[in-house]
Amino acid sequence: MLTVNVYDDNLLKYDYDLHQYVLNADAASKYLGRDIYAEYQSQQIANAELINQSNQVYAFLYSRIAVGAERQVEYLIATGGKYRDAMFKALLGQCQYALESRGTDVPLQHGVLLSKGVVIPQEALRGSVQVSLATEQALSKSGLLYCGAYKFTVPNSVYRVGY
Image (tube, rainbow, N blue to C red; front, top):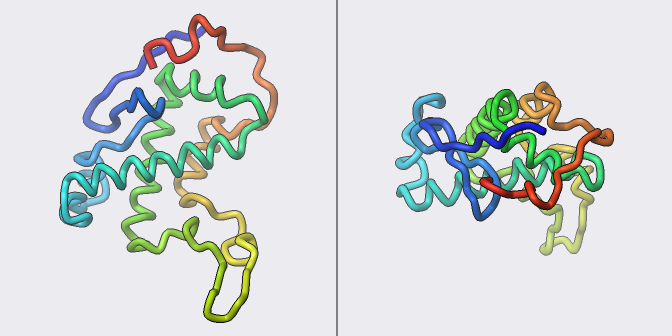
């Protein structure tokens, strides 16, 4: 069994309540060349937006893997290494996407036009887009979007212990 290696650094911080990594605001500013606090008008709003982006990435990830594999994938990410690196790239890609789209995130487009009494299926509106292309590529390249059955289990005695 792999060893849990969850830690905070200048790139990511781990949210123990959500059991997921969140992009560090300073890393977003450094790697995107934009003052993230100025973009979102305050530190509090920026941090909330980074948590929201993390939620989007993890929700996308868990929606694309095999049913019942969430526990194993969460554990793999908690072991660090290439999976932690992939999460950094995925979260950075999602942050860049959110900043560039200026609040018109494609996943938020619901396809309901109340003024016209029309409902457009999300797939017709945006295809399969739920996260940025950079985010999807980072997750795919690392193997985190593997859709098969994992050959290991995460026992209850280990699950979410230290992460």
